[in-house]
Amino acid sequence: MSDSAKRPAAATNGGISNHDDQETKRARLAQIVQDQQLLASQSIPTPHTPKVIQTVRLPDALRKKILITGGAGFVGSHLTDRLMSEGHEVVVLDNFFTGRKANVEHWLHHPNFSLIRHDVIQPILLEVDQIYHLACPASPPHYQYNPVKTIKTSTMGTINMLGLAKRVKARILLASTSEIYGDPEVHPQPETYWGNVNTLGPRSCYDEGKRVAETMMYA
Image (cartoon, rainbow, N blue to C red):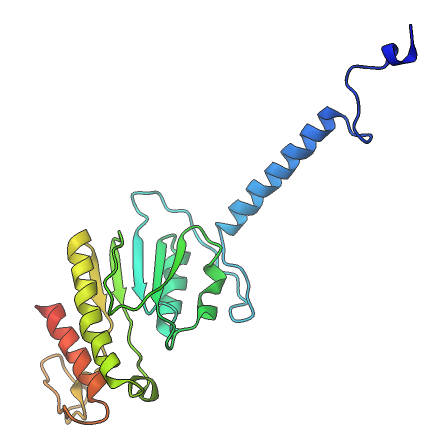
């Protein structure tokens, strides 16, 4: 019998048997699964947000899908951190006029997080359980940069979000401002106070837009 006939049937490839190759593949697959589970349980440290934020796994019956307009801004990004840490699904909607992608980039890998670049003055179709409507520039240099656009953000943006909430039967919360009181003569201002406003002043594009938004929320 020749030497080749005596050679075992399980030939080796570069010194690695088929069995070893399968074990290597299984180990790699197990590592991938482990990495995915880790990514789904926390944020990733970034230069802007170095702190790791842990997330919990909620059962389907308790986990909500939540839309945050203006979610890449200061308030919106912190709200995103809180809701993500509680185990909810979060959809951030922002046109990045004042918001920054860096504020939420530590969640971009997470399966419960979505980021959509969109302007709220344009309608959008989504399936959500709750809406936090924060979108609107709040700093005077920003909202005075394009006063008409500021008014449209507060009015048309709120109309679109109310329409979305009605269609999908979602609860909606509007982030308003004390600026609706203008230059108040009462301190602190109760909800019954109507304010001391100037509809033609430099802040009116922001003030009146928010006042109309509150009116629509009440209606």
